[in-house]
Every structure is written in structure tokens, then in C-alpha cells.
Image (cartoon, rainbow, N blue to C red):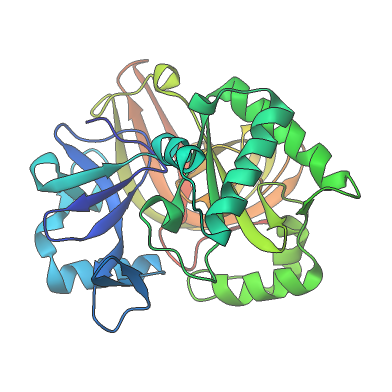
Length: 337
């Protein structure tokens, strides 16, 4: 079965992974462990108790210790990734299907009700179909707690643009149930993110305070992920190869930000200067598979960023170029200069 960003999968061992990206190897899914059965966990589904793993580094460590067979070196991405074979998958969880089931349900919990209410508000405000919006995260796999947030997924470039515009308008309306983060909210978010990211609070506030994809809905945290639809994904596994060239810190200007809201996100660059790391030909873009780096900078803004330099070999266009990939390490960042 085809999988994409926002889906979750459950293996025969009862492990639950969240799917990353839009391009996957044949008969495998690139995904990160999210929940695993553990009697000391705080999440319960039926008779089974689960624990959640938060930071990316701890996810790799846990898999290496308990299920190393899922960690493999991928020659096209030139790094060790978690790739789950199709034969190991017991259940595929789809956000659109979850939203549909909640609409039919008679007795919803408080968080499920809020998630459905928010999804309905965005659907109606942006005039999109129920086929283009889904509910992901802990609600998708019935492992929510009282502290869980609302995770929504929007599919398709046009739909994403419409929802993003509606979202920004709703955040400006005084009586809207959607509210941007306050400075206190950002402080709590910074503390949480600091476990898996670097940077200072001042830089953090500059970027995070103006994001529409995150905030509060009726006092509950929300995060919205914008994902391209199936017919918009023109890359197949093996079409593009990435070569790891080590870490670097750069200064640049954002020349195109039209894909900054999507996961994966992308920023096109100009006036690039390498501050630390290998001097290369022009680095043309910054990319990330992590939602926290969406909406990070806007066209015309000067930025400083640190991450992994990759040589990109695109066989579809017979083209080679360089990019900075951020989000794999806690030391990675992109901030306004």
C-alpha cells in the first residue's frame, strides 16, 4: 500500500511508526518509531499500554537496541534510515479515513471532538473536500492523552494554499476559536523543542511567533501539516540520489519560499556564503523533512542555517546541484540573520 507523510503504520510486533516523506523504496516505508508497547507507558489502547518516543536521536537509539533490523543504510539517501518492509506491516493508518470515522461516531472524547470541529471549520472556511483533510497524530492510532494536541493534514497544493489563507484570516479574527501562540506558549514550546534542537529563545520567537501552522484551538495546541497530493509527486525512489558531503553553516537570502509550508519543505537560495564547512559550488536550496522548519523564513529575508550538505544527482533532469538538509541533528537550525 502507498504511504506518505502523516500516515502511521503498525508492525506485527505492535510497534507504531510515523511515515516520513513522499518517496519510499520498493516494498518498504521510510518511517520513525513513535509508540511501542511498554507496561510503564502512559498511553493505553484497549488492554495494551504504550510509551511514546519524542526525540529523533532517541528513536534511532531505541531501534538500534531493540529492533536493529529496521535500520538500514540507504544508498540513494546515503544515510542510515528506518525502513519498514511491507511484509512487517499489520495496519496502515490513514488520516482521511480517521476523519471520516470520527464524523460517523456517536460518542467522541473531548480531544476527538475538538479535532473534528477544527477540521470542519477549516474545510468549510477554505471550501475543500473531506477527501483533502485528515486527522493524524495520537488521535489517528487511538493513543491520545489529556495533554495530546490536534494534528491535521491537508492534501494537494491548491487545497493547502486555500486552507493556509483561511487559517491566517481566522487567526486575525477576534472571535475565532483559533489563536496564535502567546509569549508564554512559545516559552513552553521552546523548552520542549530544546530537547531535540539548538538555538536561543530570541531567535526562536522571531520565527515561531509568526507561524500560522501552529497555535491554539479552544486552548488546545494544534499543528497543521501541508502535504502534496499523489498526482503532484513526480519523484520515484531512485530518480534522485543524495551524497553526504558533511556539515556546514551558511548565510544566504531566500529567493523562493513557495514550498515553505509543505512537508517536506524547501527554500530556494541566493547570495550564499559558506561560513563553516566545505567550500562548494553554489548551494541552491535548503530542505527539511521536519514540520518545525516550515514557515521558517520568507522571500527576501537573510538567514543563517546549519545542517548537512548534500550533492543532489537528479537523473530525471540530468542535473546536479547542492542543498543543505536540516533537521537530522539537534545542532541543525535556520534562523533570521
